[in-house]
Length: 75
Image (cartoon, rainbow, N blue to C red; front, side, top):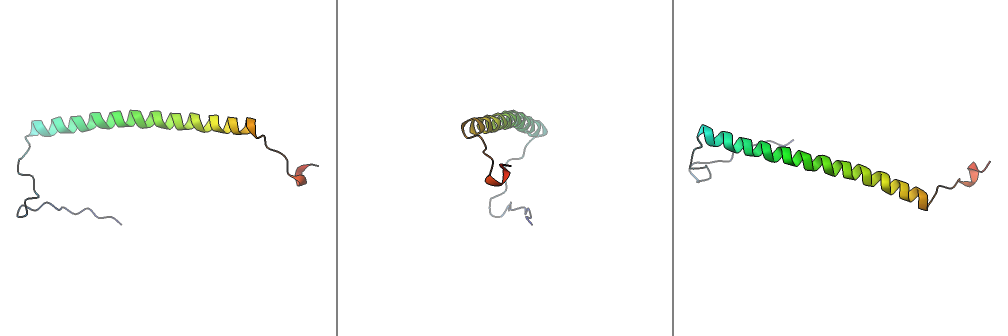
C-alpha cells in the first residue's frame, strides 16, 4: 500500500517560499484543467487508433493465413 507523506520542511528549505494568491491558484488550476482536457482528447484518439489497428491487423492476419481445421475437426 502506498502512503503519501508531506515532505516539505521549512528548516531544510524544501517548502516553497512564495505564497500564491487566490487568483494565481485559480489560474494554475485552470491551466491544469486545460492540459487535462487536451490529454483526454489525445488519449481518446490513441484508443480509437488502437481499436482500428487491432481490427485491421486481425483482418489482414485472417486474409493472409486463414484458419485451417485441425485433423480432429475434418469430419
